[in-house]
Image 1: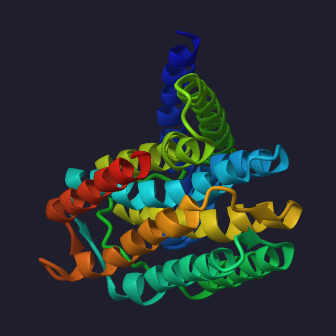
Image 2: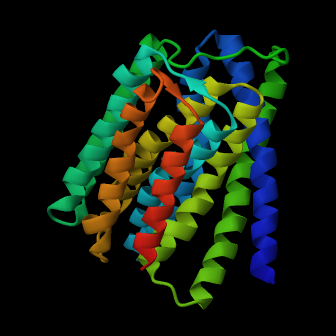
Image 3: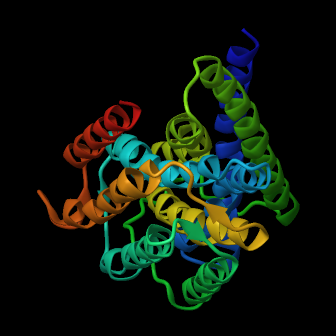
Amino acid sequence: MENLIYIVLGLALLIFGGNWLLKSAVALSLRLAIPKIVIGMTIVSFATSAPELIVSIKAAMDGFPDLSLGNVVGSNIANLGLVLAITVLLGNIDVRKSFYTIDWPVLMVASLLFVGFIYFDGLLQRYEGMIMVALLFLFLVYLLRYQKPAVVDEVPEDDVLLPLYKTVLYLGIGGTALWGGSELLINGAVGMATTLGVSERIIGITVVSVGTSIPELAASIIAILKKEKAISVGNLIGSNIFNLLAVLGITSIITPIRVIDQGLVTNDIFWMLGISFLILPLVFFPKGLRLGWRDGLVLISLYLVFIYVTVQ
């Protein structure tokens, strides 16, 4: 019963936190005249990736590397196979050229870099983490200097310029609520899963990863309902890049991460690569430069197959 209460309270905090974070992100993009997708791929992505970072560092330092790796790999799969699927089921997203010429390729480079580092020796070392963080830094510099809007955004009537103190307040409250909500949700979910005798890798790749993807889901659903599609797409692609380059990069710098359960390198990372790659053809088919409900059905079906295969 206690675990169930944690889960319900965590979900409530995450929904409210996503709303506050979105308000601050919109206000920042207006105040700084920065494209909303840049805000989505930086500030919102970092805030919604904070649970993964906290969980991964703590898990690695406590001697649970599979929980750390499974959390990030599973979150990346969930962000695209579950969160993006639900987002496009709620409404079509039109995509511009820079989305698939810059943002998606960076996601694939980050994914392939991680797989290359972890596949052959089953170890993510400090210098590899430093390379990943350096690549993230270069990507952020590029975003802030050169990125143009990559998603056609409908400008809602409630785009108002908030006072600076309110923007900072919403950002702080939203980020804190997302972090606290994720903590409660993860504690409750892991508590439930542990009593069922589920393995560490399975907990990480399913329960914990979905739990730490709830902020992305909350922020994206709120964004799509408010027609802030640029923030929704940017948040998801950005979160996956942050998860790989920042979360695993920073975690491995603090303490090298070693694979214990080989299922991570024989199964899970290839699902992550496959679903990440699939986003490109889905953008072009069946209708050019658009993600729609059919794409959502494809993604969520693949995610369900992944969960079924993984827990067998």
